[in-house]
Image 1: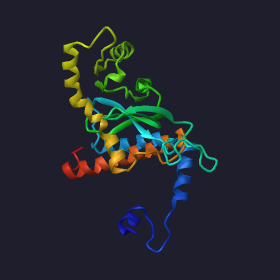
Image 2: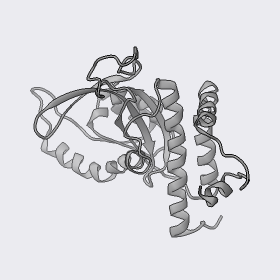
Image 3: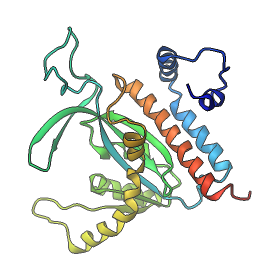
Image 4: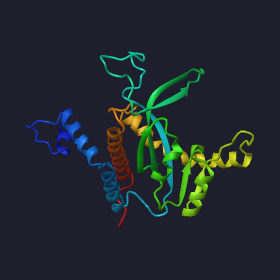
Length: 253
């Protein structure tokens, strides 16, 4: 219906437009060939070439968020099967949360894990079942050339500290206390200082959920959701790049 959209997509004004099945077939091919990550890398390379993404001296902020599965077991069926189909995505994982009133609920979710720079551009991303611990994805999310790694206490471990020291990456991972070994006042102060920068890791999730309407996964299965959220990462970076161009223009080469 929108002529500007048609022009942007190089669609003739008197021609047809792709329907949902066309887009699904495209996503199937993208998934089968595992191409979303090379596409994200190429988009970022072009943004780096235009000096919209700055890589020199960049930091890395990693974080994760749960996304309710398309079939989470919390629909009208209330755990029962509907027309012979299961109410839960078998590749999602169980996620337990407690609301402000203390009520505990469990649902099936996927976790989207991202690595962003200080400007909020996404450089790495992966998707796991919701019951996978955030810390298991740290190797996937490391960029290799970051000057510092910022993360919340879910990623805190001696193994992580040793790895960052070996790679020469400044450790800005928040600390946590343990049973019979509560967190110190110094670490509490350190956590508060890190939180100011670390909060930038939540920017992609706000874009996904609020701007793109992705509070639930649109597909069943890990592989297809991985590709779909890879496209969402590309869209988020292009959206941010357009905003940067409007605010600052192109930097001189």
